[in-house]
Length: 159
Image 1 (cartoon, one colour):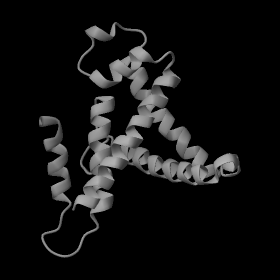
Image 2: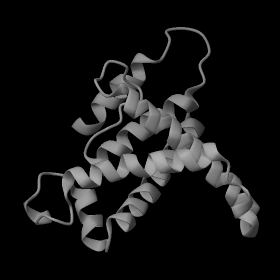
Image 3: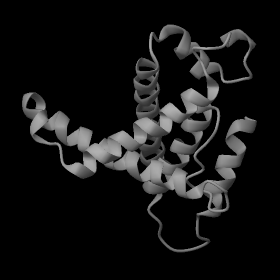
Image 4: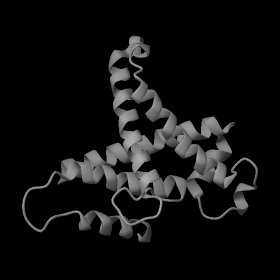
């Protein structure tokens, strides 16, 4: 419960006392914050403005959205997905990959005994099952995508 309280507080700070608000973008940021905290051991704090690495985290959140929209377009193109590859999409994918890879490198998951590491349960478990850092990165991004979007959409629909 403690892992969620900071993010709930950050979400509540963005809610106005009166008027109309579109909750869906807030829910996407909220679930991104929680999912990165659970997966990577550290949140990107997309709802918080007073953190030291705000620019890097904001860039990740923006690149993640661009990459996701591009992947959705590619999915709709099915066998012709390779026709959709604008520079912005490729750049966003590269930046997202680099961001997640930096967490993997910081933890040195394939170089240490995973049972002796500090509490990064999910990433450690996925690392045990991954042959390479690239495989680990792809697995984490798949869970991150599912964890953020399905949860945000469910919250939006519920509200």
